[in-house]
Length: 322
Ligand code: TXA
Ligand code: MG
Image 1 (cartoon, rainbow, N blue to C red):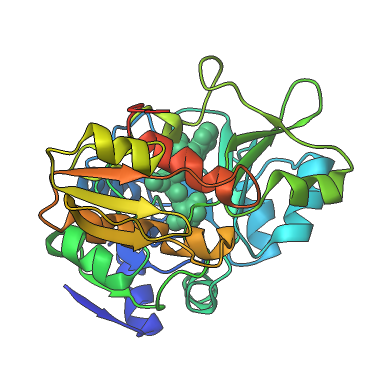
Image 2: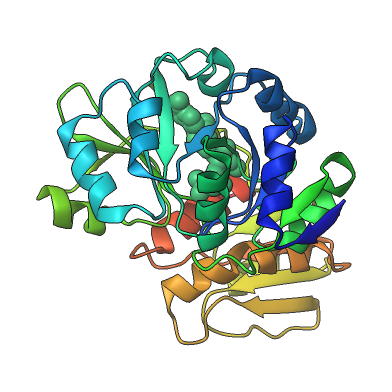
């Protein structure tokens, strides 16, 4: 396995039905030709991903939207026009070119145009869209650099296109148009509810996590480090776990204490955009220390804080300590 910036080489692998790690503005993806079910199957096998969990199809231009979707509800089209290329995924009725494997049998396909120059050029060069989940083993922390991908999936894939560190750092926001004609957020991500409201004139509703056809990324434990992670007030959690060696992931300020092995501060200036960009890389760093447990501080529920908290909550698999 190698990493590099050779778009021609990446395209030749994809044309031959192979998989390639690709950069996006959110997280790195593990890509295959979306029209080729044999290639898509490799993605599931390499990620150890259950077949019931469908993949996002990444398009490189507006013609590909017409090829992949049967039709696009006007509200979702407004959002795509406003935020593509960018961290928004829309769920729309699929065309006959989309194989069952890609959508796990659903009539809806998840589409997005990523905002990364290397990957947009790659898709244009290939001439087909790329089905790609995040390039991490199923359930583990998402990768935000080519090295993260190489370390975890390296032996299983021939090439990672290295586009540098991801600028957004959390996955795309997934939306659909529900039966009441409202925009519904299935997964919070790089586009906030307020940004959506600025286009549609109405705050989107949030899908209940308990019921309904929830995106399987909503599985309870996800984005998780190997070490147990506890989410809550760090000062209180540090007292409670005083007999453990602890790694701390805090929002603005450094925490000190005898039992702290390492403390990573997501954004000393309190910027949720910067915090989102650092989230997964810092979680990985803490997971690689010899701390026994991890403690994470929730962000304020505003801006990208909502998307970050959703991931921390899943990474803690519900070990909420507040
Ligand atoms: O930012 C992102 O969205 C990144 C980059 C690589 O584009 N991709 C990503 O993919 O996060 P993944 O597979 O890790 O998460 C995609 C989520 C999953 O929760 C999946 O269940 C949901 O999207 N999804 C995909 N297709 C769907 C469909 N047809 N219906 C409902 N949910 C779908
Ligand atoms: Mg993922």
